[in-house]
Length: 434
Ligand code: PMP
Image (cartoon, rainbow, N blue to C red):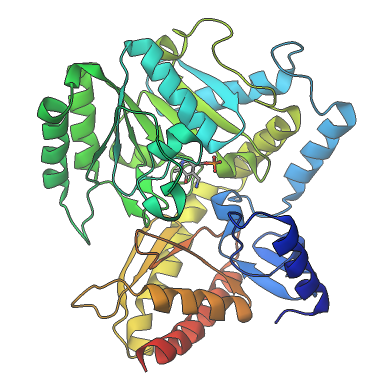
């Protein structure tokens, strides 16, 4: 599948880049539109990875391109702390209006998801005067040293990079499929807070309402309500990390809205910038305003080009009804995936779960044992790429296909992708289960 040009780029990549920068397939992008990517050989692919969940509005959305071009013609960077500009304020106002809180909100702009989470911890620590953080097993919060400390998976993320900042405690995340149940996980959380840590030192509880890297597992509403209750009783700041599950991916702008629980702070990133590097921390004003001037910021934080892209992306989200579309995409794909155990005549799909278009397909050796089928998953991903569908995995055992397709994708493209998926799954199963 790799031509001479592609092979040459592979050799040059090997020579020029550190091994730590992994590349899933040698598909070198030439151009991209909506949910389609063309590589340098002119081959077309359907993109179910969507910039790892950063492209809810799709590749090269004309509104985003026009907004960024117009801003580029005016200026591309100043440093907001020295020479401010309107775009930052407009974007903060738009996000404050959308925020899933009843009271007044304030928004800080930063550049990456990890930075948004780091700033959430800074704000929570300043507000409470406490130091500890509670996170959940299966979580992913970023690759900086603090957020890596808050991330649960050892390989390939954490091994060899410690020590990490202290006072980070892991509590079980509920999973209807693999356990524990919501009430078991809540009991474990209460026990952690009450007797396994200095409970009065806990500044923040950080949760992905739908875990991304962890395998697309949604926290049940009663679990989120339980966390909220404990946080209220103890003055702990509840932080929703919506970097992956936010921006209409689950059928609502913020995934936590499904539960009716109000967090205190929300970190967003990825799709909110429509492919440009921008992220944000949205929070209750009384908490956000505690940090004194100069305590928050960064050179590129709220970069004008990225603000223009994010403002355009918010327009697209509203004008094209992406939240409603997300539900339709999720229903269509989940039904298509569920039908595959019959059509392949093999019981290798353990579970298809979805929150809107955030669809996870858990592949297992057989539905009784539920043993993760990691090898099958990697063959499936390879075969699908060779046949024009780009897929990514997730989950502790890398056996969950996670769908992060743009929310602008047509039904025709979704159906085409399902049909490629079916063929690749059957071939991967033949190979592994032979
Ligand atoms: N939080 C979550 C839930 C994420 O999925 C990610 C990225 N996968 C991050 C934080 C980190 O975002 P970034 O890579 O932009 O730093």
